[in-house]
Image 1: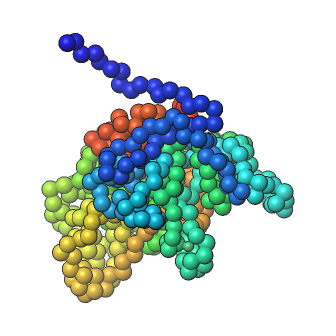
Image 2: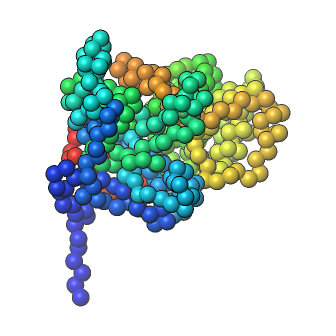
Image 3: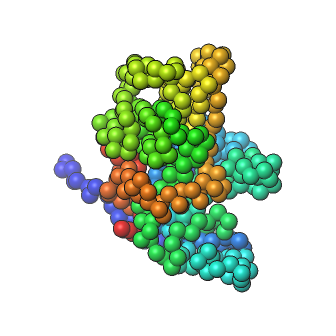
Length: 406
Ligand SMILES: [Zn+2]
Ligand SMILES: [Zn+2]
């Protein structure tokens, strides 16, 4: 029998009016996503904004959801709000995006905000992104300016329908204006798709003062590379960066972004320990460690290389509980300060990142652009996209649910 070569990807059929194309996680025990072309366009709530998605990017959480059959942590998280812990209602995945406002609900009218200048309003046709963590507004954390760690946060694309879709709806207060009247010149759509992730990196750097400090950044994936740019921009005096995969490309970028040393720790941490020992002669380690990899060995490295009285910021999520973690030796006797980072502060992290992008100091936009794959993927190319990520062909990918974008 002769085998026929199929085209690399097949264009999916176009949805009927008022329906849309999207990627759905149907079953947590099965890897992958399903492309749907008959999902109703999301209905607009009273205080909501419906956005036509231009670009949407893929992050580590999406990879974990894609491979959920082998990741108990993400399965549990996605079932967190189910009435019965065994239940799971399929959702549209994806949580990093930018787009154009399609329609606003009756609770979002210029009349209501008549004293607000037009350039601050969010209106149909505006270019926006959004904070996809929906806080409850009522818990102690929400009441005390810490909505990013809201006790009942719901994340679009994890607990609720997300943005690997042609349209997404969000509460007005979560929408961030990037450009009036669809103006994407200041923040291009390749960068607009990354702001959720860039906000994580900004939040990490907001958590510790790195001015005049030595900093070890463990993990040179997208967040680690963004953190490297920011640590350099914010005045770190020496930056160590480590990585285990795709080391040549990531280290080349890391060096361009400001790392003084990029170390391959795939075969062990000796080179990192030796370098810290050689350079940090005034003390017994680095001032600040930013753990952004989630690799089990990186937690050992973090507490090994931090100096007594130093700071360890934890952002990467390990696959499960850490065994053999000696808290007395790692934290107590060294007098180390440890802080976990989740999401972005609402909304001071957003204000800081918009200022960084708009001023474009430190060439931050062109650096962010270098992290993203040149090729943009259609939603129906999702299998190829996740394969390219799994094989480390690319670090950060973009889908264009409504057709090609610049
Ligand atoms: Zn993400
Ligand atoms: Zn809350």
